[in-house]
Image (cartoon, rainbow, N blue to C red; front, top):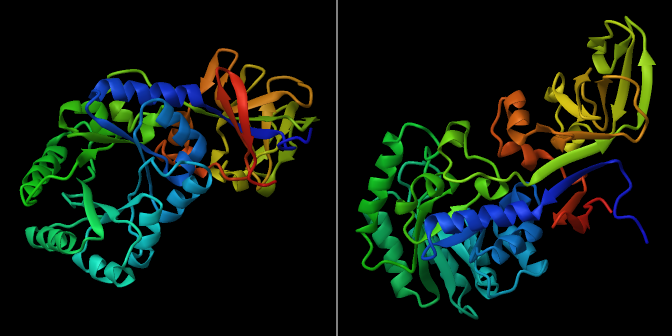
Length: 385
């Protein structure tokens, strides 16, 4: 049988962790609250359709993506038409009939969007829309009572559109200080009064708000970062109502091992010089895989020991200082657990001075994904072949 991939670098996605994280949020917010699984950006780098199916099995009732293209890819990969998908970003009005035909709800926030979308009527079936209200994020959303009323007027006048939901997005729900969160929540409550009638879905909570304020999620929560087992922020780690299980790990193998003498240099720019005779291992992963040049001086796990990255990370390879001579083929863990030690996505994010969201999203299509359930491989995806 032909191999799914031939390189010695891969990511593992623990679908059982995804399942657990979804079920935990479902129990936390209550059975009356819909869980909308956010699988944009290839499910934060984890694998869109695999995570989507797992989330649905665990009790999520809807999916959310950033763009129409992502929603259409999910349909193409087998997510059935009876599973609602919400596009969170802006969509060109000319594609409204296509979205309607695929049971894809669109986010709306301008009355003139409807004026442009109606040009393409008649639709084969009505388009579900969710009105986005800007309560202080400053990104997308209607802000004034006049804007909201204009949008409602367009929806009521045009039979092709159905207001399925209304929502907002919090800017600081993951921070310790709650003043701005409270301001946005109160603003949302006031703006809801501008609606002549409430739509079926009202949602304001992302992962952070869902975890911290289950009594304020209305009847749906958008489960993003914590579905993948990551806390929305470092500040929230001590506030989590239940433990999260990290789903993503990253591994490789040594492809070359050599002994360098004191004074010899390693990699581009000759930025690393051996202080003594050292064993250096070459690992086939680099910045083209999303393992960025800034990862120099970080450590990975090899034979259960920490091994620092020495010299600059190259496009396709990097070098590590081994604790002792090890054979070619020895497993290297960049993210995940090995022999009782663990490197988390948060550790990588701290080294890069960024947030944990960015790390799995950065690991590129070149890295094959192995999907695990009950500790067994159920699927391997390689975007290169």
